Amino acid sequence: MKVQRTLWVAVLVGAVVWLPLRKAHAGAQYQSTITEDSSNTSSTHLSKPSGADKIVLKPSKKKGDGGFVIQLVAKDINCGSRCQNNVIDMGVHAIGTDVPNAVGILFNVNSGQAVFANGKNKTGTGTLFGSLASSIFNKSLGIGLISLRQPGSNAADCGNVPLTAGNGCNDGAIYAVSGFVVPADPTFACTDDNGCGITQVCDPTTHFCAQETCAGDTDCRSGQCNINSGQCCSPGVGAGCP
Image (cartoon, rainbow, N blue to C red; front, top):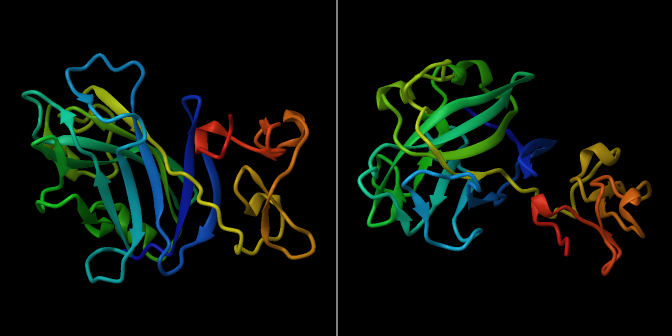
């Protein structure tokens, strides 16, 4: 599988917002902070403050990585007796279709730190998409809402992609959530505002994305204005809201 572009998403008040496709380029990486789920009643908890743990998606040219690697930077996970076969429950957008809970990626917690089956906290995405791989080869792939779950009832079901209803991979309790954040990219060419992040607009002269200015919430595509800075913001994507 070769992933040429990635679709960034953000978690906004519990909802997933799909943001515009942009072409991945050398050195680009897309980072998402992990936050303990506010309704978490499981025995697994994050010790670090919200935002300290993260998921990173990076382009890779290494054979077998499928174009990208996913890195889970999570330390001090208090998992008690439920440290093996935790699950990254990931939604995707592929071939024009949103597929929530499409992929279940197993990881273990060793001394509080998350590691994949390879013993590292980083793994290639080439082996993670199962039967979807041939369908999305050389096509755009979006990453949606991500949940960290306690072990499911049948870890073997995580080998089936996309996951089916009633599977035993992602039926464990959710203890943390995440979604990808749009990085500032002032050099990205655009044709209209839809080609820019939610706190940016397309400059009609330069055709580059620029920060959207405002005097009030109604001036912003995001619906929120930081009146202290005069710039549009969105707390869900960490874009400078007070």
